[in-house]
Length: 208
Image 1 (cartoon, rainbow, N blue to C red):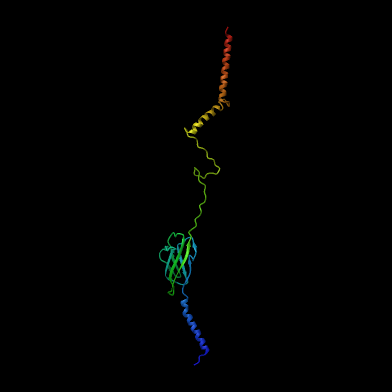
Image 2: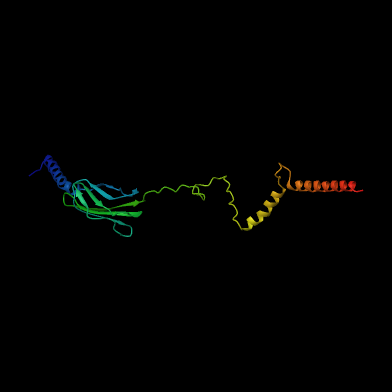
């Protein structure tokens, strides 16, 4: 019995088509489409992580831990169709983290993997330079002069200043309008001497 070349070609095409049809479900498994944060990303703050798959997934397990294995996730992961969400603890310290996940795809195939990222923490503003307040609570002016406080009574400064003030007062202008006191004393002495001489001479002339 002879087999025609056409029949052989047809049989090969049918075999190839059937093989492709059976192989397609095994090759086209569900997979991770993206994540927040992304692989290798650097973020300032984070309250939860999200994983998005190409199809609906079930039984999600997500663990977020540091490089030394310390866990920082809180509660269980929640699957909503293609998206899986995992909450995190408050006040995550800056450093390197890893998202380890495992889910079951729509065809029953397990999907698992790890996503590393870095938490940098929020940037803090640098403190601005402010002038230091003066004694009264207000900033001191660059060219302001500070008045010296008055010397307390009985202090060495007050004792030293007293004779100087008296000497200045003695040398100062008298009550007559500008002449020093010592000039008036001298003038009075000279006048008294003159009057005494005048009276003495007058008395001598009256004597016989």
